[in-house]
Amino acid sequence: MRPSTSSRATRLLGAALTVGLVVLGLFAFVFTEADLVQLDAVRLLYVHVPVAILSYVGFSVCAFGSAMVLWKRSTWWDITAAAGAELGVLFAGLTLVTGAIWGRPIWNTWWEWGDVRLMTTLMMFLVYVGYLAYRRVVPAADVRARRSAIIGLVGVLNIPIVNRSVEWWESRTLHQKSTLGELKIEDLTLFTLMLGMVVFALVFAWLMIHRFRVGWLEHQAETVGLVAAMAERRAQRDAEIDEALAHPGVSSGSDR
Amino acid sequence: MTHVGYLVAGWGIVLGTFGLYAWSLIRRGRALAARVPADRRRWMTTDATEA
Image 1 (cartoon, helix red, strand yellow):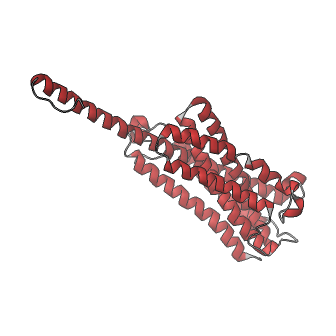
Image 2: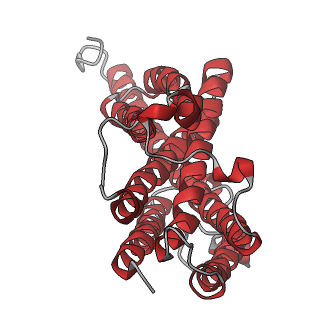
Image 3: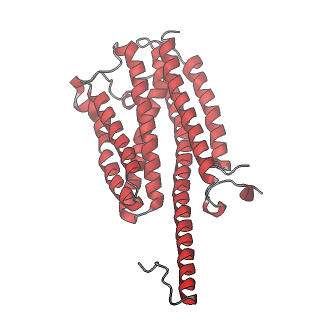
């Protein structure tokens, strides 16, 4: 078998989430009824709500990892923070897209620029896109880790703002308040929503493990390259010293 | 069933994006793993660890 980021645990996780997605599909499209108001568009919420909540998880992982980077100066936590941010951006992007697709038939608009929930979610998404972009342009690993950790920590302040925006600015949003908090949904619909949470959490975990391992390998590849270059330079220097000792009257030019 | 197009687009984009992202991670992982010595590939399954 070719070396990869897979392990027995991730293969089991992959099998579990594949089965979970099939079961979720059955519940979302076969076993549950259409909503009286939203009709079948409600079936989009079984994917929209879980990816939205998991985007918070991704950004929270990034923030925690960032705090640990500043505290411990740890590469492990830096890679974890970056993986969390990338998954957070992926899930937040999908939240925006699925929200727009759901909003078109229900609100009669794809996007509303004055809506506080939409705009705060977009801002949170863009802050972490900036985080990822910043990491790509700074080559020095320690500087990159420290400065991006600050962005990661500041960015997480968006989560409570996004989450509470529908309560704080009630008149400036089309978005409904928390349905889960007030338990206004029926048993099977609620069960399917919870099942969606579990299944997409498995997807998140699988992606997070693999993304971390890719980051770890990138770091190792950089280190291996650096060590090889240093060894080559050291061997070259030793050869020059030997040459200088063997022929004391001839300068090799390496002392400059 | 109503809103079929929206349902196909919403679910399709999410599942398709996850599939593509997972595939890209596996590909990147394989390419990088080939450049890194086995003893530096912690957590990973290799021929040595499977045997």
